[in-house]
Image 1 (cartoon, rainbow, N blue to C red):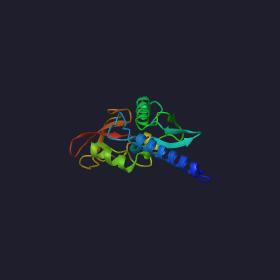
Image 2: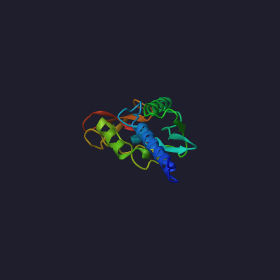
Image 3: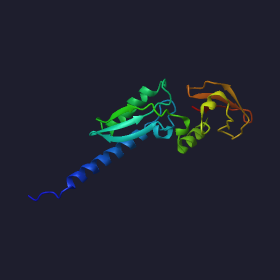
Length: 176
């Protein structure tokens, strides 16, 4: 029986690893956020990476904030998606640094929020964003004549606002 050329087995192994990584990333990226199910983890920007380390696939997730109640549900959904993709041995780790910010929400995610009636957060959220009201455009009519009704909306990461032009209430995804 002829032997394989030097390096062919290594190349095949590398190709299998690359395919497994691609499957893992696609599976995890498609998981939806349990609090805002129009957004995927990729849209939200909490999927930080998928890598092959020491013979195993590692998925890195960053919670939107340390006390986020959805963190455990997201982890379970990611583990289920990986198992369904044929990768039950993949490991999910939490990465806290650098912390997540609303700047991590993708442009696709911002468009989805607006289409769903949630005003997307302003860009370049810094420490000052926590202590001042942003100019928030109504996701329905586009008017910036809006006012905050409550610092708290349907979830901890959203505030309740109202448009003075169309008189409709809406959620605003707070800058973090």
